Image 1: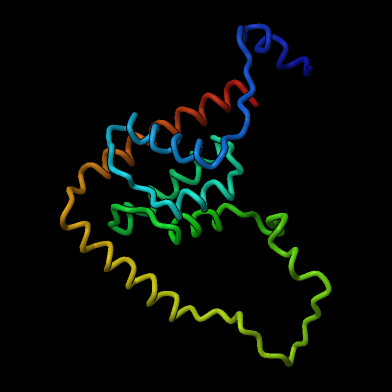
Image 2: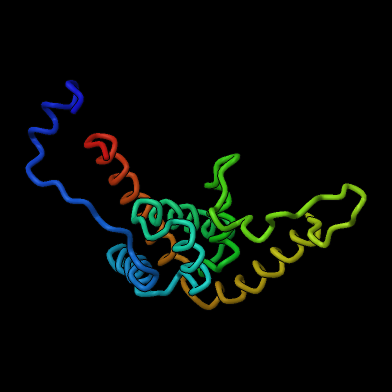
Length: 174
């Protein structure tokens, strides 16, 4: 134990380690947090929950971070439903350079790259932007049918909660 943390550790009466959540528990956890924030609306699609679980491996702190980013992204884009694409984009933003998923390149072992070879995995930013714009327009139609204020309240409460949790973590440590 570090000498500088000794006094703080002595003041902590209860210490508990939370095991990672399963995918169904992750879905229930997200729904529970949204209910605490004041909504029963299912803001995250099943695909979004899958993306969140896949990256977080069920760790609540990381689930909270991804959900916070996804809610903020949804708010900025004027969406009321967070789909798999939005969640995936938020997850991709959290991946550090050089970091990769353990299974992301498992099927590429022994694969050699020929620089003259055309690959089917080309990225077309214009097509991706058009596809995202079409998805956003599709969701905006739904947005007109439901009140936006619920989503804003949920996002604000969730952001406050995340800030509180991060402050406690910084103060108490892991």
